Image 1 (tube, rainbow, N blue to C red):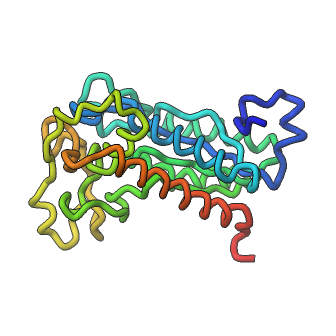
Image 2: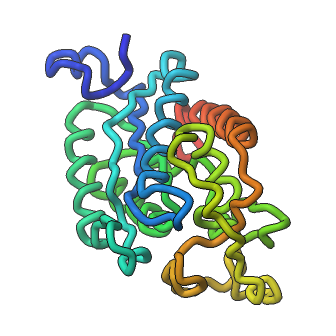
Length: 256
């Protein structure tokens, strides 16, 4: 049986979606990732990760995959022709309208699976807003936590493989190898930031930035060491971790 929400008929919503169900919304982006990767990177990773998670633990935990959002808040890449993005207000309105429909099904748990690091702060705000307005238990997960928000990055990238770097390129090589042009990749790491104690990616003091503030071609990291084999390993690990998190989402009730 398909566990894709859109494959259910109207009457089947009432018989399949209930207070025990978890609805999983993959959120990607259509934005530049340098010359070595296509615009679809974040969408593909979010969508494929959600599919794999539902295949791995959806039946056991009653997880249903919502249609992926391909476009999101990517305005840090607005300088690059071809990038598609919602304004912050539009993104908030889209999430609100989706949550309104979800609330009508009787489901109580909504998980946002974010494949685009630039959404992170905005989606964190949305969790509380959707909780307040619709009473949903809301959660934010990532295929991998973005380095700019405390996630891991490689030592060679000085912890700053945040956009089109080794790990993201590797995962995409695993998923869509025919779309990767590694011969066009070069090291793009803002070495000076690594010398800071606080004002840096993942540091205690955040800063506003656009993706071309550091390098004109708009990617940040060192994809030159990427490989499909590493990507397969990272992807499998992410799916395992997300299924573990889903087990806690299933029973989460504010500490009671």
